Image 1 (cartoon, helix red, strand yellow):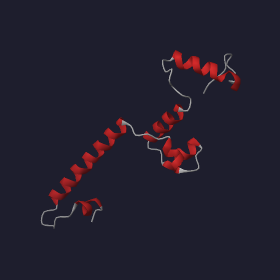
Image 2 (spheres, helix red, strand yellow):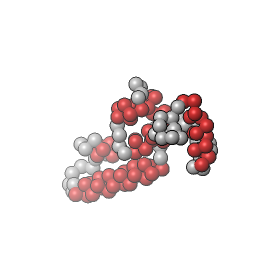
Image 3 (cartoon, rainbow, N blue to C red):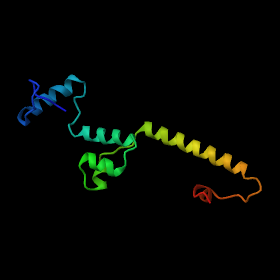
Image 4 (tube, rainbow, N blue to C red):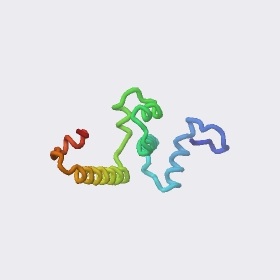
Length: 113
């Protein structure tokens, strides 16, 4: 992800100096190196990656560790809300087409009884 000044491997001894300069140059002076793990895992999760896939990508042995690096996002919240709205519309249409059948509770509909 990062290369040294001459295009070769970045040495540990020179990392902090280069990292600090890059943060300022890109306008993110408060960015911590570890923040990229949080962003990367959250973005990977928005693609639909499973928890096990996220754990593998991040090198985590426990789901707890993987979840620490995963954050909710407003974009995903909008997608979830739209999907719930569509599911509600479909359920309502299904109820209207079931004339003469007994009304089912919301739990029964959710379980497709």
